[in-house]
Amino acid sequence: MKITIDAVELKKVIKRVNIIKVKGQHLPVLQHIKFDALQSLTLCKTDLDSTVVITSRNARIDCPGYALIPEKWITNIVKKITGTISIEAKTETKTWQEPITSEDRNTSDYDAESEYLFFQRLFLHYDYVTKSETVRTLILTNNNIEYTTRLEYSTSDYPLIPFETVELRDLDEKGFSQAVKQVIYATSKDEERYTQNCVCFEPYNDDVFRLIATDSHRLSVSHAVIPLKSDRQILIHKDALKVVIALLEPNMQIGRFVSKDRQNTFFVSGNTMIIVREQDYDFPDYKVVFPNATNHEILLNREQILPAILQTMTTTDGKHVVFVLNENGLLITDNRIPENQTIKASFPDINNGGAETFSMEGSLFLDALNACDGQAHVRWNDAQSVFVFVRNGQDTDVNLLMPVRM
Image 1 (cartoon, rainbow, N blue to C red):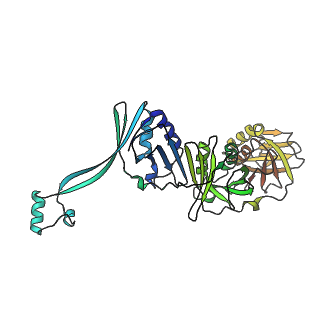
Image 2 (image 1 turned 120 degrees about the vertical axis):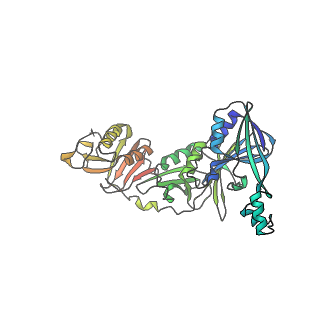
Image 3 (image 1 turned 90 degrees about the horizontal axis):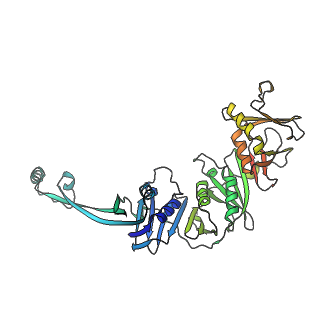
């Protein structure tokens, strides 16, 4: 393989494929970028949950071929160079001779005449065995300076990229991005909770999907128009969705491939293709936690109460915040016991006519409020019930805090 490409173009393409961050070292081959130089230059990178394929039509193919190039090596070099770059992968066979050893004695290449003759030759080094090794080397040339590295893996070692022919339909990238960002905060941070590391896409009606995410402490629901055909829930890992959101661009199209052994969702636009593997898990029955009715409701504005919540979290080791509702309005404090309370702020205009005291983790409360664009109708039954945050008064897009109190 040999290609010639401008440094600016290569930097841009590598930056886009490096959106995928491979975690851990259990599969070192994934720490590489696959260069396919056939009719045009294509760069591929995968973490098995998502695959990014970027095509550069500004590269000159001097000699078609493939190469699996270490990600860190080429990224660090491309950062500091300018001008035209030549990248060439060479394969050569190195041969050398070594004195016969006891290991060679049992090979088919060596026929020992006798024990005496073997040790005599070993001691006097009369006989040698010829050994060989095929070495693949990558040479990157820029401004008469050569950067060289050994290619440890062949392209056959890399996971197979699932290129499929699918029907593509136009995607509303703005609506899709907004819906995903609204729920993805509620996914679990525990990597071993596989199902709760995913966002569930549930068919709602026509081309509308309901997006659900939960970590058992909170649950978020939003809706988006996604032109996919499915009669069941689709689970996509949160890291794969972050890759999609980072690479979304105008005129993006979406499609889906389904077979017995795999299901993939494709996002295609111009020279970019993102392939997302659908997870084969069963999502929890989230509907059982929705309350049938609520007795209390208040309207909260994030900017109004944020300073008091942050101040309270500082004095309680970043944990609980106590909310007191009474005839004086909403009070934010740091203790449920009245005689030990330090009132951080009071809001007389926030009042639902009742009396209630409840406490919860401040960060979870703010996350739910942020997911509602900073303003939400908060509904609940009592201090131990589910708290429902309704975005802009829209009952379809909600965020729930489970009855886990501090």
